[in-house]
Image (cartoon, rainbow, N blue to C red; front, side):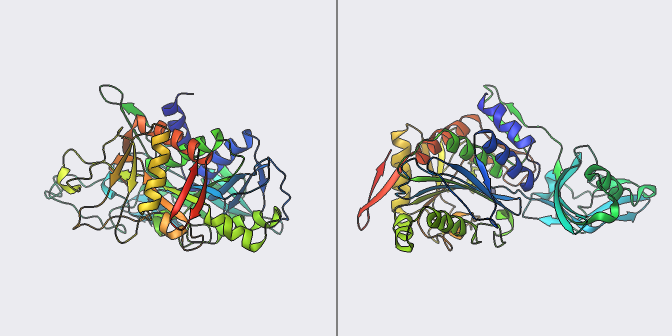
Length: 435
Ligand code: ZN
């Protein structure tokens, strides 16, 4: 399949973090991966392929080398969630003859992009069946809501720097006041249960727009949730194409990056260390073998990066100006909000050089604070050499973002090479990368 078609279909089938994990695990299953439950005992066999989910919104996949000797872990990490609006428990309210859906912000979205376009909702509901609480994925999958902007005639300052109050400006319309109560009814219908049986929900709005490839040479791709599904897709493809009989490739896709990662399934959780220590135990590694393996491990933390904006080039550092289709961006920050340092930048650059993949470097303007991402947060639980990278994009956290078509292929190829490689520390500060 064409890479862009594959990316856009991955995004379309992943309207929420839960659906991202479903899309990923369906693909892993089709490639011979077996699901493990955290609550079960594990039996792992040489050459075996496995995945574990937590909260149905984070997933870790790994492949046991045939030789069963584990030099180290080659970990690729990205996030499954995107900024959105979460639907509250009492979901409906009336205003001026309309029924609105009560929402609150999830993450730091560009509010303006959410106005005047059809929206739907997707996520997870929990249903009581006898004495079981069962999780069901839900995608309402229709043009259902809309957040109307205020007409220019009623807000003459609308083009002079608007501010948006999430409680008053960002509440979507569901229908007339006569339909109040019907949302829960619709939810029960879609889940095929009674309204009374629905005991909980994690439902998020998503825009109904389809992704598209555009530009005079079809060089750009725009779609919802490119941050971070472009990286999640590329890591998955590279992971599936890799072959490694020395190190153990690990794919880690984590939820809740957009709200700080400090949840049971986020990058700040014990999920990664739990899975790595358990699989080490199962393979018969001692506690010190495990720590030696961590010292010979490496993480690529992949989360999209800012391309220089043609209308606001002054916002980029004068010397560090990633452009779309210019290659993978290595992110640097002196305060280590990005984990990249001299060693991890060099290891990743050497890998890309060998695979003939272009890289670019990003740092914020010295007078601007940047965003944060997964790498340094995951390192508080599993500490290892880590590089923060991303694909250059515009309009980050708009509900319709833009990136370069070539960069997805660059990251797939880089991650295939990475997941097939291994690393050894030969002396303090000297690392040998085997490709
Ligand atoms: Zn991101």
